[in-house]
Structure formats: structure tokens, C-alpha cells
Length: 249
Image 1 (cartoon, rainbow, N blue to C red):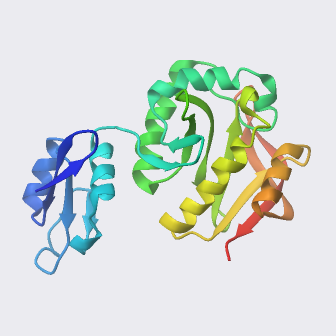
Image 2 (image 1 turned 180 degrees about the vertical axis):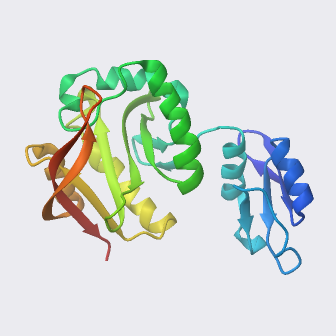
């Protein structure tokens, strides 16, 4: 048993026994499985957090295990002005405020017309994307007033090398350097924490603001590609984008 310090002290169990892990999983008790030569043949619950070396467990790791078990968003990174964190269902109303301006969805998919559908989608995203990959699209929270001002993050893009960098900002927060500040930190996070050195982004050729941002970040334009995207009517349509690629030194 180890203690995990957040605002208060919380317990995260460490076990090498499958029966104990099954009990913890059934009772929503945060736990980590220590894999070693004594338990290689045991069957542990799917989705278990596992380590082979106890030295890999630190306070940050325990914090994230505890948060995942109790549906508390992970804190991803901070910049001078922003906190980058996982989305929570409570953020959805603020997203609708940001997406209200038609210019925001000119070059990206809109939210669901029905907020209940967006809430359901958010819950599934937290469970299936964050829970499986450990990364995804995150919210950008302005530190001085704790308002959500946009989203940015990394996603797996089937058929393409590296992770896809995506980003959006509410109109009131554009042209203030927030996008560059957030995306720079996210690229650094991906290199440092995910050991990922190649990134891609797909930009409409008329979206000059996003093109300038990608170029400033160090992305290089490649070929044009055609990708499927959901339009305002909820229909899947094929659109053309310029593929930009970033490779860390």
C-alpha cells in the first residue's frame, strides 16, 4: 500500500496477486499491478495499471492512477498563462460558448446539435480514448480566471506517421499567442512523456491562421490528402487538406 499526495492524502494499492487485483477492480479501489517472475501466469483484470519495476512508480504516476479510477481529469502540463488538462463533462457548456461563433467551425467539425449527445460523446471519449491511449484532445484553461478558452491535443491518425496535433480557440482568445503557447508545450510533452518525435496536422488551404501557426511551430507542408469529415448536417463528406509534418531533432 502506498499513499498518493494530491490536495489530500489518498491510497493507491500495489499488488502482485491476481485475486487482490480482481477485488480492487470490482470495488473501484485504485491499484497498480507489480508484474514479476512470480505472477507471469496469473490473469489480471483488463485495464489494470501494470509496472515491472517498482522504481517506475512515483507520486505523479500514483496521482494519475487515482484520478483515472475516480474520473478526475489528469493535469497534462502548464504554461505561463494556461493549464492543459483532460476534459470533464462539466466543461461541455463552455465548449458550446466557444463554438457558438460560426468562424470556429469553418474549418473543423462542429459539436453535436443536441448537448446531451455531446455529453455522451465526452463520457465515451474520456473512457475509450484517455483510458486506452493516455492522451487525446485536451482543454486549455486560462489560469487567471479558470475559463476554458479552447482545445488542443494529440490523437492517433490511422494510416499516417506520428500523432496528429489538433487545436482550436474561441474567437475572443485568438491572436493572443495562446495557440502557439499551448501547442509548443504539447509537442514538448509528446516528445518527453510519450516518446513520440513525429507529428502531423491537416489544414484547409484557406485556413491561413492555422497554416501560419504550423509553420511557426516547425511543421513542413507535404502533399495534399483527402480525409473524411462530418459536416453541419451530420453527414460524412470527403475534404481536401494540406498535410503538415513535424519531426523533432
